[in-house]
Structure formats: structure tokens, C-alpha cells
Length: 179
Image (tube, rainbow, N blue to C red; front, side, top):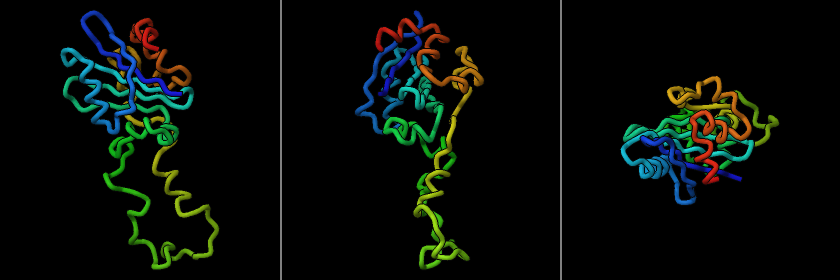
């Protein structure tokens, strides 16, 4: 089960709104949705949580590029919403990289130079996919520092992270209204 909410900072505090991500296909779409929630280019946080598996925070400050933190990239990669957040840049990959990018090192039979083609393995993607997305947090762990949630606290969050973040921001009551 997923929960996604927008927290928009206003002069009067935080304003929360439940958000549907069904029409969001890219990080750019998500950033546009967040900017629409802001009245005057104030800070907007998109909080996404999949039960106890992973959570993500996207911070939009005006027209600046979104800042992203994902608690467990490997778990998020298995989620359609997580895939929106896990950009090539965030994962340290060049756009267009994939498991077949290094074809130069393969012999014509598909094995790597010097590799026996009768070696046991778990398939062509056995190591490639595991290396592509790391287990554990990725992104900007200092994303909420100036709002009272430091890197250490953010990385320590596990269960009910969205609620704990909202509490730290003084927005827990506001968030509960849309939950």
C-alpha cells in the first residue's frame, strides 16, 4: 500500500494535500504537480511511502531542480512510483546505460573474453541488475537539514517515516487530515 502527500510551506505553516500519482510518469511531471501546490514558489515536499519497504522525499524550491532522497533504492526500483524517483543521475549512471551497454567485451558467443561458455550462472542478468540499483539510501540525505531533520535522523527512519518527518516539521496534524 502506498501513501503520497504534498506538503507545501506557506506563511501560515504547512498545507497538506493527498495526491494521486497515477498520471505521473516522470520526475518532471511530479515536479510540475508539486509546483502547482505552491502559491509563491515556496518549498514543497512530496512524501511517498510504501508501507515499511521504502520512502522517498522530493523537495521542490521554486524553479530549482528537484532534490531527491530515497531510503532504499533496491526496494523502490520494484515500485512504479519508486522508478519515477530513481533517475539515472540519482543512481550515478549515464543516461542510456543498461546491462547490454558493454558489448565490446563480449565474444561472438555472448561470453566475456576468457570466460568459459559452460560456466554456471543464474542467467544473463544475475549480477547486472543487482549492481544497477544499490540496496540502501540514495540521493540527497541533507534534503531536510534546514527544516529540522538532519541526515542522521533521515537515514535512521524506517517505519512510518512520512509521519515522523511531518512531526519534525510541525505538520503532523495537517498530514493526518489527508491520510
